Length: 186
Image 1: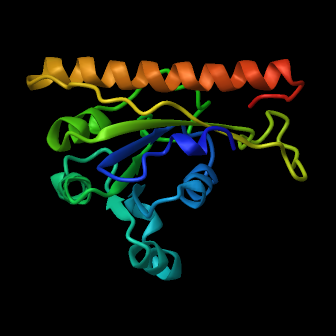
Image 2: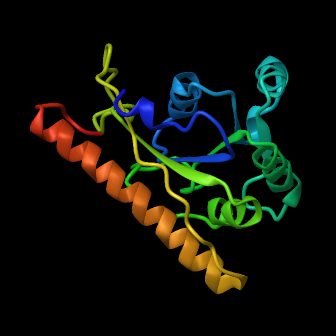
C-alpha cells in the first residue's frame, strides 16, 4: 500500500474507491487507520455475513432504488466526524471509473466531508478465467481534497464529475506505476 500516511487522523472523511472485485471493500476497510462504515449492497446483509456487517457498522444500500435512509445514516456518521466509504461506480466493473453515480457528491454536499480517493489494482480476475495464486495487489491512497458541490442537479452532476475525474486520475497513476514496475494490470 502506498500513501497510507495521507489518511487524515480526524474529521469527517468520505473515502471514494474504484471497484472491480469483491475484495476491495475488505482491503480498504482493513488498511484504513480509522474505523469506517461502507455503503454495502443490501443483498450482502443476509445470514451470518449480514449480521457481521451490521456488527462492524456497515450500511446496507438498495441499489437501483431511491432510498435516502442509508444516505442519511452515512451523513450522520460523517457529521459525527467519522469515516464513510463508497464506490462511486455503483457496481463492480473494470475499475477505471469511466462513470459514477451521484451518491458520493450528494454525501459531500450534505456533510461537508473531506474526500480521500483510493485506487486498487490487481484484484480483478484475469480475462482467461484462470485462478491466480497470490496475485500482486496494490493500493494507492491519493491526496485528500475538499470539493464544493453546488446546489441542485447541476451541482450534483458537476460534483460527481469532479470526484470521478480525481479517482480516475489516481487509478491511472497506479496503472502507470504498475506498468513501469513490470506488474500486470488489472
